[in-house]
Image (tube, rainbow, N blue to C red; front, top):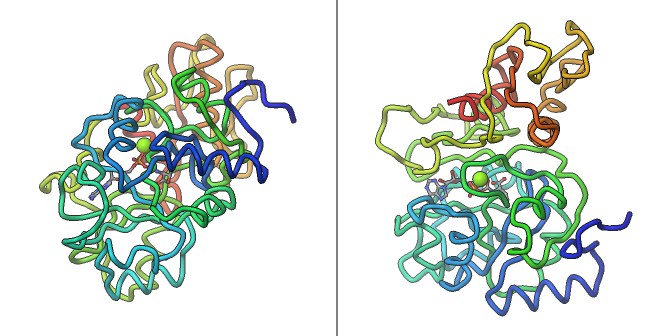
Length: 317
Ligand code: TXA
Ligand code: MG
C-alpha cells in the first residue's frame, strides 16, 4: 500500500539503513511496536532526549522507557534481580516494562530518567524495532508517539498527523497488534503494577509466585506520568454509560447495543483483548468525525478489562 504522507516509509533494507543513520546523528524516528507506536531517540545522548521532550511537549519530570534488544545489552546500565529474570524468561520480548535500579556508571542520560535512580526498561517484540536495535550500539528511549497527555497512536498515519512536519521519518509497520501501552511493573521493592496492560496481574502473580500490588493512588508519586490526566482524545469522555444522544458518539462492548451510525463497537464478541486493540483507533476515528462528546458502555473490570478501564478513567478525568 502506498504511504499517503511523504514522511512515512515502508520497511526494507534501505529504510533500515536510513533510520540507523538518523538515530546515530541524534535525530528522532517514529517506530512501530507491538503495543503502540513510539518516538525513538538515542537513550545515551542528551541532545536526542531533549528533542523527544520538546516534540511531545512533555514535562521533563516524566521519565521515558529505555528499549533494548535483550537484557545482556543492558547489563552495564541496569541492576537486574531475580523477579526480573523470572518475568523476562516468560514474557520477553513483549509488552512489559520493568522499573529497576540504575547502575552508578550507567550510560543512560539523566534526562531519560528525570534524574531518578531507577529506569524503566522494555524489550519490544515488533520485528521492525528489533531489526533496528540489532544494528545500534545504544538503546532507544521511546515514549508513545503522541503529544503529551493525548491518545497513543497505533498506526503510522496517526503518528504523522500527531507531529505533522516536525517529525521527518516514520516507519510503517502496520497496526500495532496489542493497541494499548505495555504493563509497567516496579521491581525495585515488592512487585507493584504501576500501569496495567495486556499482561495481567494474574499472569504476573503466577510467575513471581508472590503477592503483586497495584500502586496505591494515595501513595507517594512513584511515576510522575501516572497521575496526571492522560490518554485524552481531546473531547469529553463519559464512562459507564447505557445510552447516548444521537449527536454524540457511543463506544459499545458486546452484542446488546443498537448499531447506529454513531455507535462504535470495541468487540461484538465481548473479547477484551480485541477491545483493547480497538480502543485508541476508535477514539481517533470519533475525533476525526468531529463528534463533540464520547459516551462509553461499562467494560467488565477483570483481566485486560482492568487496563482498558484504567485508560478510560484517565481519558475521562
Ligand atoms: O508500550 C509502551 O510502553 C510504549 C511503547 C512505545 O514502548 N511506550 C510508552 O512510553 O508507553 P510512555 O513514555 O508513553 O509511558 C511510560 C510510562 C510513563 O507513565 C512514565 O511515567 C513511566 O512509564 N516511567 C518511566 N520511567 C519510570 C521510572 N523510572 N519510574 C516510574 N515510572 C516510570
Ligand atoms: Mg505515553
